[in-house]
Image 1 (spheres, rainbow, N blue to C red):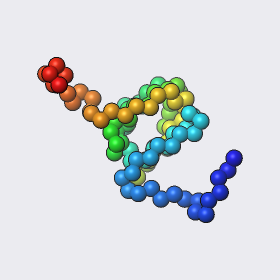
Image 2: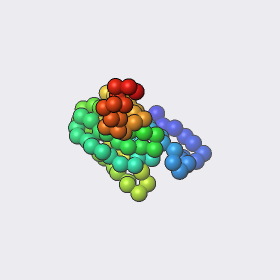
Image 3: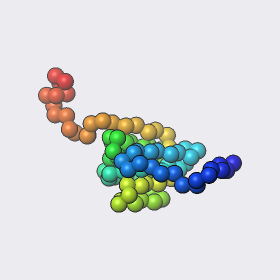
Image 4: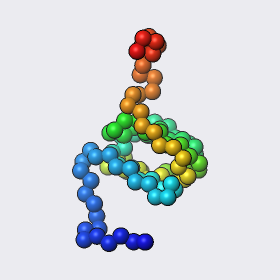
Length: 98
């Protein structure tokens, strides 16, 4: 199946965070600030909308454009989760008394 459009390119406003997934096998992400860590089973990505954790199997980077904040991953994606807080940003007393 192919999509026909009048304009084959899509303008993404600067700073908008867009995640596109195809058949749980390929992901395109925009507004990527940094990749904190990654391996074949997990990516931890800092985006304009918070910390994004992607879990799966045989995950790998296909394309990375640091200047534009673009990232393309391939592999089998099983979980996508956003966290508002930075890992380790809450101290022990804050966790106890919240």
